[in-house]
Image (cartoon, rainbow, N blue to C red; front, side, top):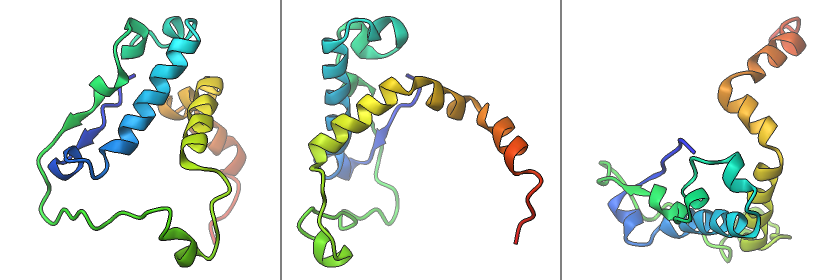
Length: 128
């Protein structure tokens, strides 16, 4: 895995680190449950028995960084006029599994191979 998320000092103090840590924990669980993932994703820390949390690094706060830019599950229904149908943990689990099961799709996206498909299917369309 080549993406290394970075965190500001505010995040390091727990503002947003929990979401990143939860993703890492979910990946760790997936690797523990399916030993074949280690051969598919050999560069992942979990393939070597280490936590994916080791990928998280911290950066200094950027000018204008604010800790007020977060929402809570309680603030969303009044704001959006709806309620979540899937809890965060369940949605996170499903999302991580989707990416594991759809490796070909995201490899094409990250490699740029999808651009040929877009060109083939959309080049004849005129922008409006």
